Amino acid sequence: MSNFVYLSKEKMREVEKELSDLKTRGRKDMADRIAEARSYGDLSENAEYDAAKEAQGLLELKISKMEEMLSRAQIIDTSKMTREEVGILSTVTVKNLNNKKIFKYTIVSPEEADLEQGKIAISSPVGRALLGTKLGDVVNAQVPAGVIKFEILEIDY
Image (cartoon, rainbow, N blue to C red; front, side, top):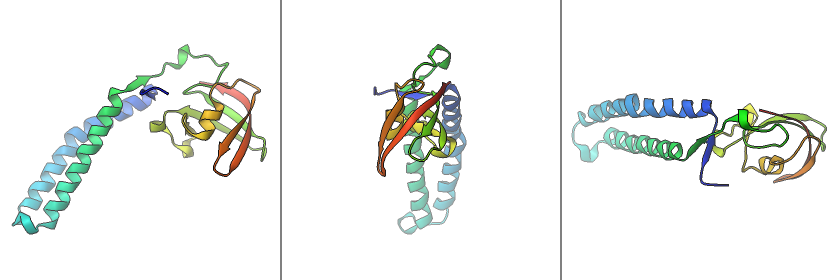
């Protein structure tokens, strides 16, 4: 894997919107909170001021991390991708041959992973096992609980 962060257009817009909101409204709210805490008197013994300054530091850290991620972001254009092989942003329908259950996963960057939405990281054990596979392939994914055997039933974008 390269140093890039692969994002869908939707995720890129979502991150940009959140970053803009944090830099405008978030910073203003934080400044207001610090000003209010400062009005409580002596700063050397002012727990509200200390908490507000700590929260400000965490906000700035979050902004910095989001800016850094966006600086490395590459948008994936799925219209140019083949449906013959599993890649990033592929939606893969698989059959778990251990328990015969069928699952649908979308392979995403670690920043977009959300198992509840069926989005698994390309760097996860299952994501790595599925990457590069073709329709009908059977693959083994080494997970903490053991080995899971998957059959690739469908590949889509």
